[in-house]
Length: 275
Image (cartoon, rainbow, N blue to C red; front, side, top):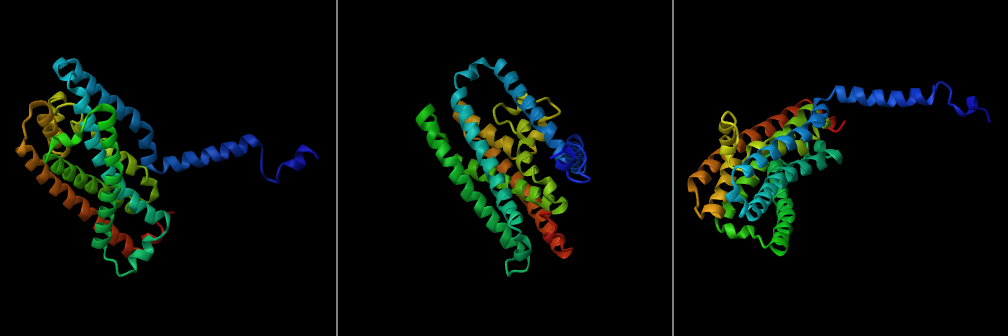
């Protein structure tokens, strides 16, 4: 059999076919800003986050002795926020992948009830994900996040609700631009990580970034956690600030989600959102 016979008619050379596939993905990337943003996102976030951690630890040697317990507790609380947001977003994406959004739209299920079901699933996913990690921290590192006592309930609730708010905003974006924004479900939560004061106090940030940090409910939670573990003080003022901010973000997130869902249903976009 000759080489000409092996090559499909009009198929071109192997280099042309490979080039065509590469060009296809370049065009796809060029038409979707979230895909381009993702390429630059992770290296930048990691560099900023660990730069602030290094700066703080280098100037606070007395903190290092207690760092293990505080850092592990911070990781576990951060995971509540991450799992809360991801649990909401993934439950919504599963409806898209199964092409079930249109069915839900014509069912007796109201949008607010759909929203409530997604938050419930987020809570279940978060508990399943965080509890085993908290148990392993006790076994392997002798660090118990439950030492925070009753304030732990407040911290858990505040971070979970903030996760829901971000998840609602992400899902509203997906309803608006389609699955090209799917990766935002994984990226969005880490965008606020450097200014959330997870592993270091807000004072470590540059002065111009500190107001942004205090505008998020995450910073008061992690500052309150450190106040308990490092100083033995319960900062109720920080909790009240975080609860107030939570209410604002939740209202914004729910409004964006319900409005986007309403527009998508009215324009018939729910049948195309998975395309």
